[in-house]
Length: 364
Image (tube, rainbow, N blue to C red):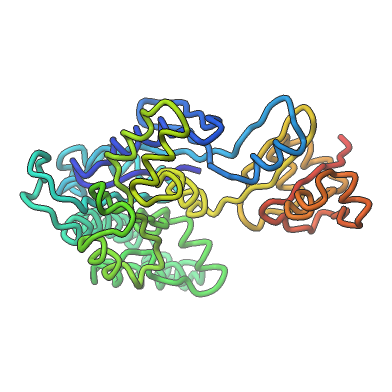
């Protein structure tokens, strides 16, 4: 699951990507590795794993990760191949969620591609290009499905109806994500279209240092514009955050953040939000060899969670032994949680909860 950073040129995308690549948690246990020049695997900051580490004292700790993709800046006409348009649209199609960076700071030394700072216009530029590309995709698909719908094919008729509704939304400059499919059949179809504007989005307002804690007028404009989108808005002084990551010690970084009126780096807030945007959650395994956070989709069953460790665990799943994170921390050890009756044995139907500490029994 990947979240792609998008935006116009010179809004702070690459600085943000580099900032995430250098982010340091308190324990400095916040590694980053580059798979390709523009894809990074970033640890998800989670104070719960630090608590488990304190109690269990394992040989090693492995945090959950999220893939972040730095995508080339988009310009007007990208849907028709302008600039790096085709590459941009191909890269974004491969992502599962969008982190949309908007420039919300004034600086005469950093040129804006459209001459002046206006995050509302910038957002609309990106939205329109993505909507135009989706419109092209929808109209091509409509051409094919109309013939089958005319013959009385019921599935084709359902698809035609859905495509027409999406087309209407796009023509009104509304992204596909604003449309709600009717019933399971339409949900499946909607997913299969893989439309760019159907992807969940998170807005990052890149501000100056003085606006990091409270935002500014530009941020207020963005919040007002997206209030009906059910999308989170994060305020981040990207340049300043990049400077903070260069500081050597945790104490220095903490002092710098406090001076800015922040409790923690904005990068940490952003990574957790991206993880949530991708509909991911965490369960833990805790033993003397390793304390580890495992990433699963929200709503995953116990066998599916086991399969993340190894496919054999899912195939031969017998049962899951579960202690909630809160109970584990409260009682301090697995044994004490068991004594208190907080140890549960769950079967194949169990839906894993965020923070569950689990062991799996399986037979292959």
